[in-house]
Structures are given as structure tokens and as C-alpha cells.
Amino acid sequence: MANKIDTTYPKDALEQLYRTESIGRLKERLLAIIFLYEGKSTKEVSALVKRSQNTVRDWRRRWNDGGYQSLKLELTGGPKPQLNAEGWDAVAAHVKGKGMSVEDARQYVLREHKVEYSYGMVWRELRHKRKLPYGKPFMVNDKMPVDAEEQLKKR
Image (tube, rainbow, N blue to C red; front, side, top):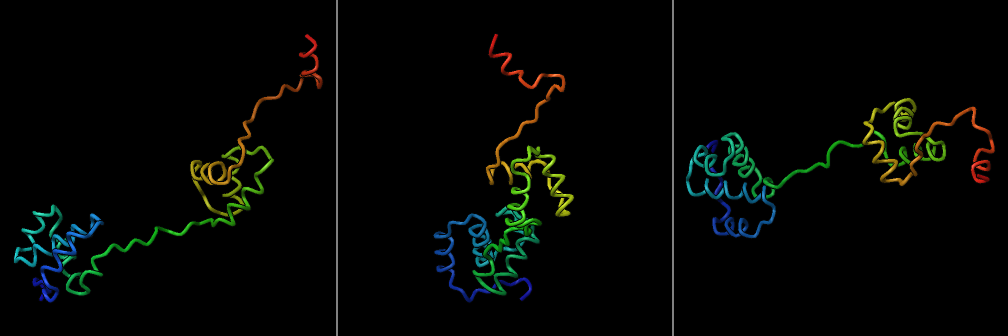
């Protein structure tokens, strides 16, 4: 049964599944299985669906092993975050009100949590998601008098 397709599922029901499927990837896989039901070779099917022969073989194997359910996408959601929401909340609490730049916050995360994030990631977590205010640094002249604003108002 290495090159054969399991045809215990009725072809008309398979075609109905294909017509009603809304997920494009799964629809493509079902189309390949329909072509295999019709007796086309793996090479012919791969040319029709514009996929490699190995991909079509894998879809056939999965269909034979578990039917329609085995063709469904298995999305895992990606890797788990290195610093969870509570960790980011702690970083935000530490950074808030200290006038730290995003780069300073990034260095703090690296130093305290031993996790290296990009500048953009730290910006997204602190400024965008946690709405921390921007503290733009500016130069303060040491020779400027303490009451400089008052002196300017008098003029």
C-alpha cells in the first residue's frame, strides 16, 4: 500500500469536503487526494498542484494513516516567550518614572532576566502594549541658573 491511496472514504463525500472547505491549505491537500483517487500518479499530482512529489507522498501517507483529520494543519503557536507577561510587568514597574530609554530598558532586561531582546521587541512590550510614556532625554546646561525660566518670563 506504499503507492496506493486508501479509498474507503467515498469519493463524492471527499469532493463535498473539498467544496465546503474554507482553509486554502487544507483544500489544496484535499484536491491532491482527489487526484490520487482518480488514479493519477504522484508525479502527475505534484505537477497539477505545483508541489513537490515528496509533499504529495506525505499527504498520501497522512491520508492513509488518519484520513481527513490527519490532513488538518497542526499549528503550535510558535515558541513560548522567554519572559512572560508577569516578567514584562515587573520590567515596566522598574522602568516607569525613571526616564530610562528603550535601550536602557533592554540592557536592564538582559542584566536582570538574562534574556536578550531586540530594541523593537522591548519598545513593543513597554511603549505599545504597556503604554509607558516616552521620556525623551535632553541636555541640561550645568551653567544655566536655577531660575532661568523666571528670567525668560520677565523679558
